[in-house]
Image (cartoon, rainbow, N blue to C red; front, side, top):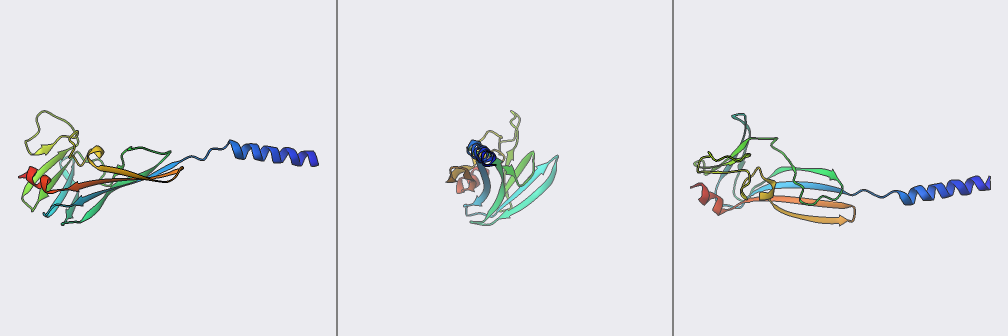
Amino acid sequence: MKVLFIINLLLLTLLNTSCKKEGSTNTKAFIINNSNHHIKLEYYANGMVTHSIVLIKLDSINAGGGSSRGIANHSGFNSAFGNPDSAIVIFDNFYKMTHYNYNSQSLPLKGYIHDSKRNLGNYLSFDYNFIDESKHYRREFYRYIFTEQDYLDAL
């Protein structure tokens, strides 16, 4: 009986020490209006508006997020707006800038291709930072901040 107890204790100790705790990452993304202008975002898929959002000065919205196993490093996020093919940003109900989710040589002048550093559909256009809350848990934050320069680009 004593031998069986010792064997069970050794097995439990071995199993407990051989398990490695897996890390996790939680991600949140935001779009912030830091310009002096009224902004309307219209997301399109197949020629139809799928989401329409209004941002007044200093307003912000949730742009997406997610969670993943392991400690991620600048891995992107799931968009709150699905998988649109483009987004039109309208400043003061007049000036427009299109953000395309693809690259092409035949885009209009007032648009950002997907690889642009100012494209809403490109997660690399968002400011990125993270907080390691423990060695097994990371929180990532993405922020796209509209500035006065975005308005000037749309003029």
